[in-house]
Image 1 (cartoon, rainbow, N blue to C red):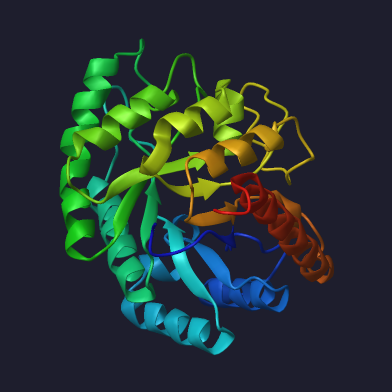
Image 2: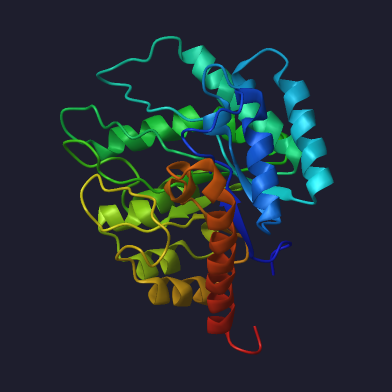
Length: 306
């Protein structure tokens, strides 16, 4: 049995596109809205907070992290899962300018995660989307070498790295769009705190058999991004569950079969971000009810003796 049972959480990227809150207040307001709606656990999105002009990308970011920790304590919410700052690593045909600055924000994600009690920090593998053709061995070798220092850094700071499944968004396959590639990457870091984040929307666009993939991942699975879509190419819509075409009953059964016990985390950011701000709170309250229903369905699939 794992130390932390499965709980409902939601990404912190839930504010309206038209909200005029200053960047330093962005996460704090999101936390307050989620707590008011009944969420006790949050999935902190450092990808947003690491954008230029946002606090993770500014001097004094450590003070901001302490402010977040204090607000979480006041609201009685926890961060057990987070999304690291990430960027598209198109190494072969489009070298990135100022790479050290991107990597610094990834480093800050790890240090902030430790301070906030995050157990699993989600990261996108390097996908090699810009290559003329897809070369699995090249992508695999690069990813193992590139991520090793970050895995070691995270391990020293008591944070696990959960690599996320992707989907083909360009003219060919992207690395880790298939569950077998994700498993191979995870298993390459033998003995390190490395696992998987299964993104249901990405998997649907990639055409994955999700129940079979979840069962293959088994105990490697430590994080979820839960959202729906219509399974169209490049159609990562981030809809609420039951608003698209995903087989949720099959996903519930698979999660029960692998005894999943980490965060059941919504990543349905478009449900609130496009709403007028005054409607956001009501939508979040409904999302919490929907999420609890889904968590209860997974638990029910385990049977009375689970």
